[in-house]
Every structure is written in structure tokens, then in C-alpha cells.
Length: 145
Image (cartoon, rainbow, N blue to C red; front, top):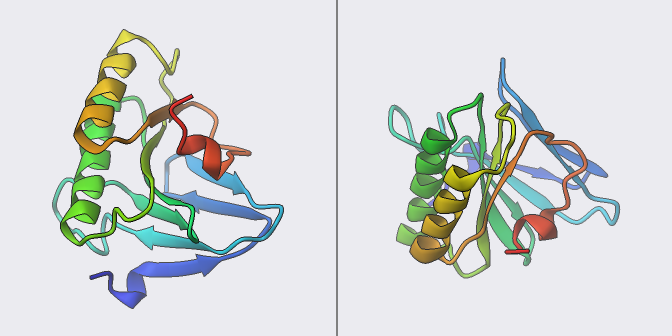
């Protein structure tokens, strides 16, 4: 399933994931719930299409996260690879979603809307594309709103 060396447990008030020379995502965690941060690319998958992280909030859901420059199409392919892995290993017992943190502006256009529809059809999962990865609320990432 998931090798223990790929997982970090975090219950800080701000849960941060980042990549060298890339963007980062910070989830607000005022109630200090437990988060599992799963390094997907480079730990579970090597040399394959893969999202950077899978973030799990205990008993709430799982979020496939790609920290990207501006190539949202490729980022969504990487997120889909992460969600497909979760499906394969039976880890879609909780709600799932995809999050892209990128430099693209505007972050939502008709291309992103088409990609969002594809994710919804394929995985029943919302897709969020954000420029600013600070002060994210995990539950809002799982919502189609």
C-alpha cells in the first residue's frame, strides 16, 4: 500500500507542503486535526506521471495536490494519476479532490472548466486551481462550490 517512509503526520496550526523551486500550499488547521502528508511523486511513484502530494485529513477526505508553474493540463494529468492510484489501492473510501497551485493567471478559464468537468466525470472529484496557496481550508477543496 503506502510505504511508511512516504508519510508524514502533521497537526500544526498551519500544515504546509512544498516543492523545491516551486509553489507551496498551506492549510489552516486551527483545531489541530491530524493530517497525513503523503509524498507521491518521488516516493510512491518514480519516473512516472504523478502528483506531488496526497494530503489526507483524518476521516474527512484526500486531496491530490500538484504544485506547478503554469501548465495546468499536465498538472491535471498528474492529479488524475494520483487519484487513479488511490482507486487502485482501495483508498477512495473518503471524498477525494484535486488541487493545482500554479502561476497561471487567470487561474480559472474555459480550459480549467473543461478539466474540472473531466475530473468530476472520471472520479466524482472537484478540481481547484489556485494562484495563492496560503490559508487554504481543506474542506473547501473537497467541495464542488
